[in-house]
Image 1: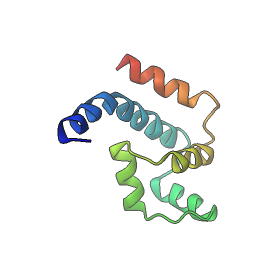
Image 2: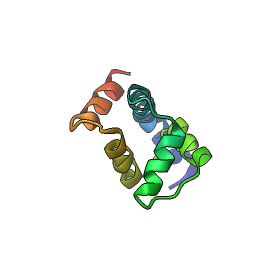
Image 3: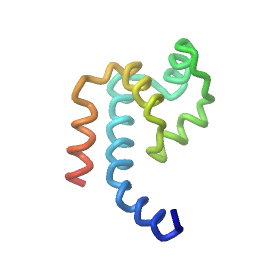
Image 4: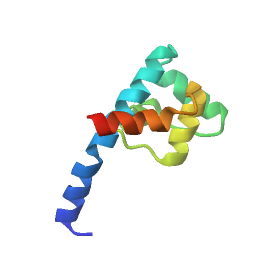
Length: 92
């Protein structure tokens, strides 16, 4: 992939990154958890990340799919969370 296509992809995906960040931060706040709490819960499940690394992933809205699903599980996200994120992205 060339540099131009990379930039086009970033623009096309930006609304989804923004929606993901918004929903993830909202869920974390609603659950009354901190990034440190999530890191500890991830560690209990055998996934070791440092807090700074997780904060960076969340703030960029770039989280590997498997990690994202585990975080949703930890947060007790409902079964419609992906649909909500997509709807938000399309409305952005």
